[in-house]
Image (cartoon, rainbow, N blue to C red; front, side):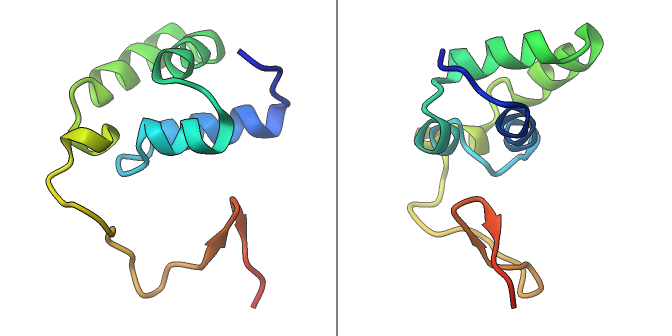
Length: 91
C-alpha cells in the first residue's frame, strides 16, 4: 500500500462509507484494491465501527461494479454540486 496523507485517508474512508461509490472508483482514484481499502478501514476505525461498516458493505451490489444492475450512468440530484477530480467546482 502506498503512503497516504491524512486528507487522502479521510476521503477514502468517506468514499468507502458511501453506498454508491464502488471499490473500483476508489481504486481508480487512489490505487487501492478492495482488500487494501478493507485493511485501511480496519486500521483507521474503531473495532465496532469497522464491524458495522463491514456488515453494511458485504455483498452490497452498489459497492461492486460487476454486481450493479444498471449498465452506465448514475443517479444525480439536480441540487448536487459538480465534482471534478474530487474537488468541488467553484461557481
